[in-house]
Amino acid sequence: MANKFYVTTPIYYVNDKPHLGSAYTTLAADVLARYHRHLGEDVWFLTGTAEHGDKIAGSAAKAGQEVQAFVDEMSAKFSVAWDSLNIEPDDFIRTTEPRHVAAVIKFFNKLKASGQVYKGIYEGLYCTPHEAFLKETDLVDGVCPDHKIAPERVAENNWFFKLSDYAEPLRQLIESNELVIAPAGRRNEVLAFLSRGLEDISISRPRAKFAIPLPWDETQKIYVWMDELFNYCSAIGYGVDDEKFRHYWPADLHLMGKDIIKFHCVIWPALLLAIGERPPKQVFAHGFFTVNGQKMSKTLGNVIDPVELAADYGVDAVRFFLLSEFAFGADGDISVERFKERYNSHLANGLGNVVSRVLTLVEKYRDQVSTPESDTLATATAEVWANYHAAMAELQFDAAIGEIWRLLSLADGYVEAHKPWELAKNNPAKLGTVLATLVEILRQVGWLLYPIMPATA
Ligand code: MSP
Image 1 (cartoon, protein in one colour):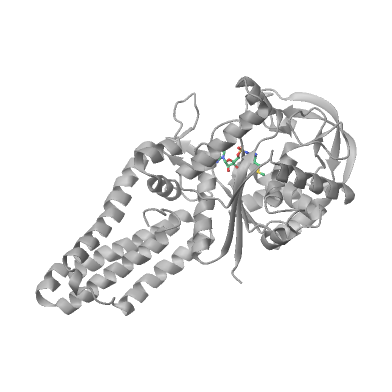
Image 2: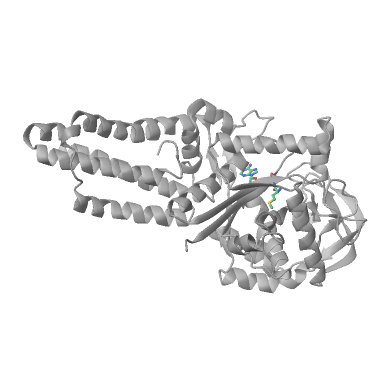
């Protein structure tokens, strides 16, 4: 039976429209899904939207809309954006869907039955835009460094999950690579965090308005992050379609930005262990963008909208640029100027030139095209293929792209070395082989390019 490959993105908050950050994660997932499908694997690619929380209810109120209507409209913007970037998920989960809500309730009942939850009082600093409690040490000059506002001090009844019992089991999972965390720097960060010990976490909120009710205590709602994490299971039929769930779980890869790895590498696997499920096989966190050295922000007016860029330059050009400009996993800087430069140097000149050069020759001498020079070709391309697969396995898209361009310059060099226009005069048999070899190289370029630039390929 074919290998299965279950890949996910975070589910995005619907209080804002999709932007470059969410597009980046979702694009990477699409590239991997296409690559694994292309290898004949049984792929399931999930994305979606996170729609609960008072922040979202607040955005709806601000927009003068009823919450459900607001989240319907905003969630649709994500589907449309992914469509316009030629991103094709197999499923799109929304946390307000009945299928998700029902699965979360089953999950919470199971968690309660595990004996890992208890009632207590929580006192702390709550940052509403974060939908999270912060520690004193998280604050900078008394305010949340991300949202620039002072958190609220609250004391409330909460239900807690005994996360503190899981530091050691989690450490073992990570050190044995049963749960792979990549890149290595993120893995070290999580291990360092675990070595300081874990505190129990609160999993319910008495004051939340727009959230799933806690099944056993009507004064409480489920903490949105707990509801959101469970999307990875609810979407593949947890508690409803056991066959599908058993087939795809555990997830092969959770992709995300580096901002949310603690949720995914600590809380999520611990919750799964508590209900007797396997943790995901791998969590990979990518970096963040700056634009011309500055954080992307509406106030600075330097926001790059991937959908607009795609409308102007073509979808594949944007896909290529986002994944080739810097290593996936690192932080990186981008700019529209560099996008244009790369467009010219790599797409118009690199790819475009080689392809049109070969096709012009083939058209001119089409009756002569025979069979490729297989030996030369095999040795020359073997390394490209090996490096490409290795790069894809490590999610090093820039390196994988580099290998495709190596193949293109190989084709270019081959044309220069054999001068088909001269062979046409003195060696038609050789011309046939040379042209067929070039066509075969382009076919391989097409294969390798497909996950990244599907339409072009
Ligand atoms: N709803 C939670 C995720 C729950 S997953 C069970 C959430 N949503 S979010 O809308 O804030 O999206 C977070 C993700 O969007 C990041 O992890 C990352 O994948 C992507 N990005 C959002 N902003 C980003 C940048 N500025 N740069 C790169 N990626 C970022 O957190």
